[in-house]
Image 1 (cartoon, rainbow, N blue to C red):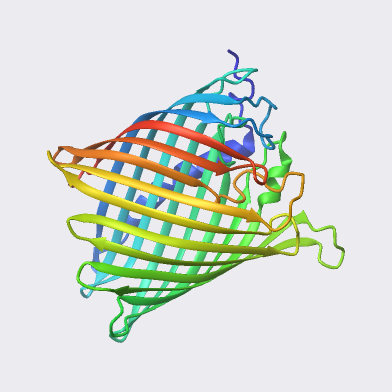
Image 2: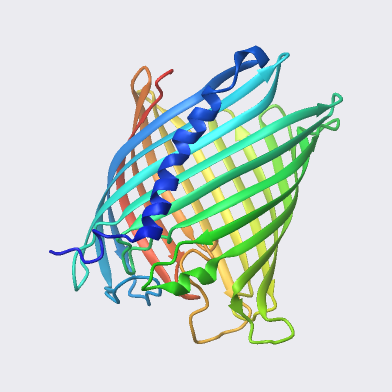
Length: 389
C-alpha cells in the first residue's frame, strides 16, 4: 500500500531527526577530546541492545495529532529496535569530578489493522547529560548538571498504536548531597527544563504541549539493616504552558503546580526486591488538567536453576480528575504519568558479554483524551551486548 506522507517528513521533522541521531556521536566526541594531562577519562559502561517484538493494541480513541483520522479498535505491529548507552567519567586526584551519560536508540514498526492504509513509523530517541562534582568537606557533595534529550517520529500512527510526538528538551540544575550519620544520603535538587514539540502542518495543536518546568525535590536514603533500605522524596513541579489559554484575561496562560511524594523499600539477599507508593496532586489555573493519582510499584528478581534470572515488575496507577468535563483534556504525551504496566522476563547469559531475554508485557495508559485508555500486549526477545564485559 502507498504510505502517504511517510516519504517526506518535512524540513522541521527531518531537522529534528538529525539532531536526535547526533546526540550519541556528540557525547563520544566530547569525552574523547578530554586531555589525560588533567586527569583520567574512561568509559565505565557501554551497552548495546537489539531485538524484535510483536505487539497488539486495543482501544478506539480520538486521534488529535495524526495525519489521518484512521482509528481502529485493534491494531498490531512487528517492532525492531537497536539502542546504545554509555556512562563515562573523568577522575582527578582519586575522585570523580565529572560524568557523562549518553543513550540513543531506534525503533522501526510495521503496523497493520488500520482501515485506510498500513503504517511504518520510525522512532528515534536520544539523551545526553553531563554533570560536574565538587566535594565540600567530608560530608557534602555539590553537583551541577545539564542535558538534552529528544524524540523524532516519522509516519506517526493514529490510535490505538500510541507514539509520543517529536520534541527536544533542554534541562539543567544543581544538587547538594549530605551524608549525615545513620543515613546513606540526603539530597536537595533544584532543576529546570524547557520542552519544545515539533508540530507538523496537519497537527499544529501539538505545539500546545510546549512547556517550561521548574522542580524542587528533597530525597533521602536510609538503611534498615545490612540487606534492607528505605528511600523517600518530596517534590513540587511548577509548569507553564504558554500556548494553552485559560480564557481568563487576568491570567491568560495555563500554569500548573504538581506535588509529588514517594516512599520505597528495597531488599538485597537471595532475591532482589523493591516496592513503593507514590502520590501526585496537580492543581492549575485551568480546570482541565486538575487531578490526583496514586501509584503502587514493585519488582522481584531471582536466580533460577541453570543460571537464568526471572524478573517480575508491576505498576498500578489510579487517577481521578477533579471535575468531569466532556471534551479532550490532553494532547499526546502531556500526562504520561497515568499508566499501569506489568511484565515478566526470563534472561540468561549466552556468552561472556552477551545476554538474551524473553519478555511478556502489558500496558494500560491514557493518551490523547482524559479518562480514555488504550491497552498494549507484547512479546519480545532482546539481546544485550557489553563490548568490555
